[in-house]
Image 1 (cartoon, one colour):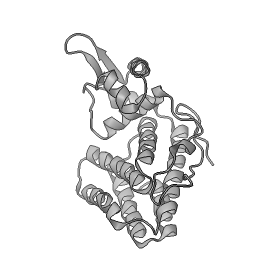
Image 2: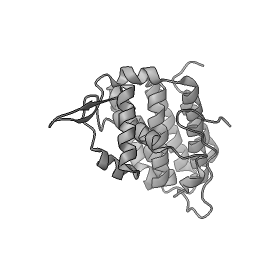
Image 3: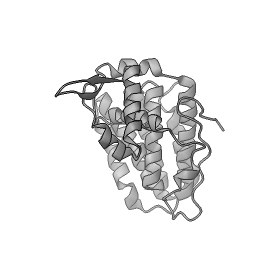
Length: 245
């Protein structure tokens, strides 16, 4: 198995909690060889917020105390993480009555400098392993109603013509998939992975996202049928959809 060691730390193979009911929740404590540090968590979650367009370049972030409460870490850890991101150029610190911490106006240009193909490949491999495990764990025992929201996202992606909106919807699909198959704890774990991936690899082109969305459709169809092997193949096909062989 690929070991995703580097900026964001190693991850090991996911194993469902023995007492977990079908579809979760899974025990996220057994998913990571080492959990993310507070600084890594702040970094990845802010990157995910940008991808989900809950904040945009130039927007003011919530206060450190609010972020600390949301992430379940200390305020001093958040402050140090934000300061490090300011030093990297990802965030801007402004003083005065209208001051605070803002997403850098040139966020995309700064992130491009941070891209790391090797580490991105390692995280992609781990994310693939996670989703294949979730699918194998739940296929054939998942109520159809749990997939309704995912189908709505697929349909919305088919109609979207804005590149940023497509990226947002794809990220939401994978977050909601993690929750549908593994519970809220796995959604949080997936959020951390997705945020890191946003920092390590260029955003895929719209044509690639649309090709991946066809894999989303195939996955949901196979989950509805309860066909585990085809569902796992759909997850694997997603990784290379729309890219040259």
